[in-house]
Length: 222
Image 1 (tube, helix red, strand yellow):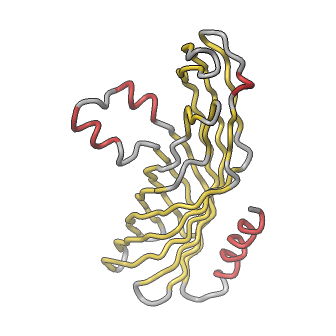
Image 2 (spheres, rainbow, N blue to C red):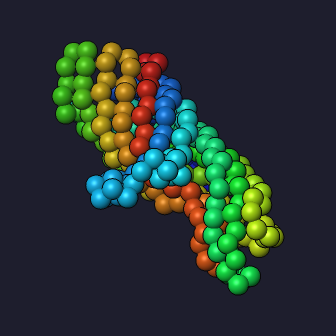
């Protein structure tokens, strides 16, 4: 994991030696609502409680470099730090105790580093404004996430739970953006496997939805 992060930093550093590039900082908002919710909204089974249970909001900030491979094609590596917190109740059947109903209060603090490497193209190139589309792989690294369970109802030993934070997972980003002078506004969808899950006797009880809609604002320093 450390080698990949170092490689991403080196890629950003080396890129500044090229003439046709931008280098800058960016920050933004991530929402865990996904395309899988659309069908539920259409048939009426997705409501406010569903939103509250599934919505994971987080903030990200970091660096990006845009290396132009031609007049309209570019490569954009990024190094972003994500923070996320969720506190909610997890209800399940205790398969180790006659399927007794158990409700736990779950507090997850997720810290992750994202390293997307995006290939983009300008769709509209004007003097002070351009419109872009992009796609590429995204590597998400666990960077010290923590989890805490508290028994809310029933009698249950939380030590029975097996919680697993993956060291890293790989996904895909697709999206579009607009540049106005030195500012870059991007909206994209991050399709990436879950980085965390909770199991009881090898039965998955809960996981963290890692796929997100992302809105970010960047400032091209040069």
